[in-house]
Image 1 (tube, rainbow, N blue to C red):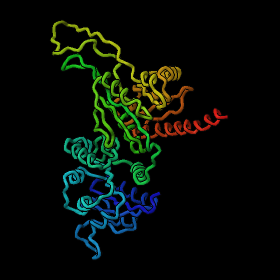
Image 2 (tube, rainbow, N blue to C red):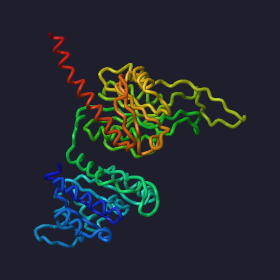
Image 3 (cartoon, rainbow, N blue to C red):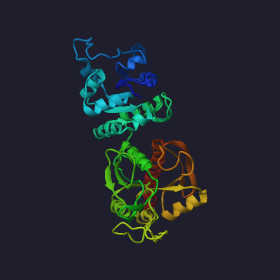
Image 4 (cartoon, one colour):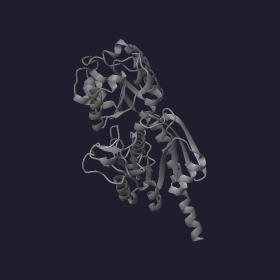
Length: 412
């Protein structure tokens, strides 16, 4: 599936180098021409001979080892590449990439290439969360560099947390997606809502929820990768905004309602993944409310039900709703779907460990008007998004196929 593709694999100095060897083997088996560049630190963990044997190509380490007088090595490698993959990517190489440093073979080649770049970070959890590392990653994302998130678990340093190199199978799948883009949503316009709304009490206080926006972002990124033009209506979030989408920033439920209704006539698919407040304060104070009594009573009024209004105003749009619950039955889920006139309702039990707000994983049940369609066990939110879009594309294709049949019956 990668026959005829040249993959430039950059390997930097971390214990996860052994996974890079497995990735190199998989790429070669898939037919790719794998060219490996190792940093000097990487050679302390795995010998270049390992990658040479797996790739059947000479491994580049030293910028000044010019074995072929016909070419300049780092320029030749940069020009050959259909894709550059850095796995593992240390905090050091991410910093070099962000700031344009070129002091070894890998960083020099990275400055010379015009190929897409996929970075798979691997480091200590505190290093990964350090503001400098996060800022460097933000800079690179803005330049179009793609990242594959590290996993969570036991790290080589003894810590437990986020920082493990993604598994070779995950990286391989992302490489295949990048180099063999399937675009079943090409020409489609997708609207995704994400994050938690804010309902102001006064200038310094508000009502909100624990939504991070991660699920909505995973949906927006997946739709974009599948070829759609994506509009993201985004409330309060804790993650970097996905690249390549039209962003509409909102704050309150009323703001989101207005933004969604304005865009609704122009889109083909609506996915309402935002956690919208059901109620808002009846009055918002212009100034900070002072402490006067032991108790404070707030009068709350209902916010418009955005999903219900989408259902009432939809024309040909395919509509998917999300429902965060702590307990529910199939009958309740189907009743909600019918009442809100959705095509699909995605329900997740936020009381289940790993499936609540702010996590990188989710587990969901997907319903249509006849009942449970698919149950997706706990996995990354990106994988959940991919499984959901598989179902959306399947349903939309089925609906499209029914149109000519219906027209033929009408003509008869």
